[in-house]
Image (cartoon, rainbow, N blue to C red; front, top):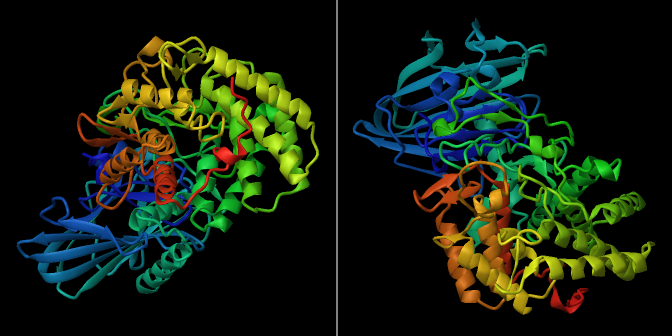
Length: 603
């Protein structure tokens, strides 16, 4: 059976990623891209769906593991009665083909080892044809081909490839798995030692550019390294997570494919990258954003593929049981077709942030923004599905209106502060109209809080972003009341739920979900902004304590069981960590929430 979600570490080559468990098993890997069909899918079923395990023959969880300093090279160690052994796992930055290198190193004594390779293409459904190619083993099925190179004798056993061997102190035994499309010439596998040196140099050089000098350097650097690992290098797109269908509810249907790029994440990601010295990555993300949203503004989607692909049809893999029985397992994401008005504001805010940060703009980018504003002008009054992609009836969600306000506010500021052309007067009028409507229809005066949607009694964690975008200053009593209401009504053991699914049937799905980690980082920021800084810091330290042993966070946390939930590693959670660390360290200012530059009208 797969391990707990928090039992997994990640390795990657900037085009795909593998999840490695504490038992030495790679239980998830998609090739050749993050969003390709998995060849190891044990994570969502069992070992019959594919995995690659290298561990002591006696089995069991590792004694300890770590990343080698500030790299994505994973070192997993076992202490056994016979001696100690280490498995070093990494993926060299992609050359002509994708490689996974796993090296067994004897530390002391002589340890009996076992390698078990079960390749199953197309999410566990296709058993490949395995043949010898000289000293190597080749596996082919349809478009996919994989080769295994090692000096250890291997043999077939129950439709898997197995090796049993001893490793002595001081001995190194490498295994190299290389993928290529089956119609292309077979690639030359990497040399393990040279590839190790190249991989270590790559990650050290990259993290060496980090200029964060705050109070939590280790946590911030590990989060940034993981964000880089979730970047699709050919396009600069940053996906939400490396997995699909890890559950937000144990045994339930809240299982979604997160191997895509969400526009809602754009501003937060840009803030994290720009605020830690990664201008080149921020530019690449901005360029990905411009390419993805180009076209008719009416066709703007909430998410896109790694290369900007728009069609992400959702379907179910009924041959997989799902993680711990949580079904269905989904590929694709039907929420791509939803109407979420906040994404127009997110794009406009992201491009404004890039401009404010000195990333060179262009006439084309401003033309696109004006087109987005024209569409938003005619549609901001419509109900939508909210940033949480609810599958219930459309509503007038407060956060969606606030982000529409944000879009017009940034447009006005661009004309006034950067001298670009546009009808600032008309945009200012719309901005003020939205502000007045939200304050009149989206605020519950009896409870002194903004609400999830007009006329509802429900709350939404996204309301914590009201001061962040500058809609109201943090000192406004309505903001303070909203923060306190979220703490009172949306928190579970101090951690923030996105909303209460059972309230008014808002998301159209049965059951509930765990606490959303990104939202809890938003609460950290909101507490800081309203002056409760000691409380903010205590909550931040609680969040840091939720990271697994190698510093990773999933999407959600279940306070009842103390377990991670949802897809992993989750970019939104890690971005929240970086931005909160910067705020609490005093190394950031807020473009939208800087009280010296408020463009709000108090209603």
